[in-house]
Image (tube, rainbow, N blue to C red; front, top):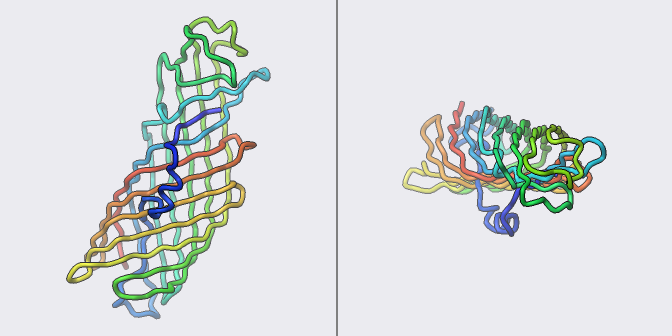
Length: 278
């Protein structure tokens, strides 16, 4: 089981302050747009999260699973695509957000692992290589309940799909005769997909003489195939006529259950985005 460290109390602290984090989904169009016209927003953004969580990597021959601190391993982004699209007409809206991540790294002579509950001998270390790839889709519909010029709030409902694959390759160094392993080298693969229903709120507060500055916020919570999922975003942006730029913080957490190959995972970090209005 891969174990990724997470800071104590991170979820409650984030929930109190909108999870201390950020929003990147395109929010509503400006008040001057006609209410019966379709308004669109397309966002491209770069998110650089830190990773936490816990994954079970089975071994051959009925040996205990290998537990690894992958927050120390998965620190390199091989490829990433992130974007969002929103449509709005009057008070009704719909949005889609998609993220593709490919992360990986390797570590030589590591002792950031364990094998089940077996104590690791002092002479044993491992050369490790880990990879994680996955998709995250969030689809929502929304209704604007507070349409003020300097503050808006939408209620939202929808679904989120998390599709992840993790691979681990290892070679053990030292005397492993006391360890319940089928061999000195090996590899393992874990994957799963999770659909969850979500509900939440999103919107923005504007300020400044011409109300070009804004604070976007977003919070959702849900469950389904996962035990619990939580996402929160908070940031600061500036609006031009048909363009918005924003810097934000985003937090996404999944509690997937002890019976799943991937037991939990969370992403937490800053992002930069550009939204095109048309």
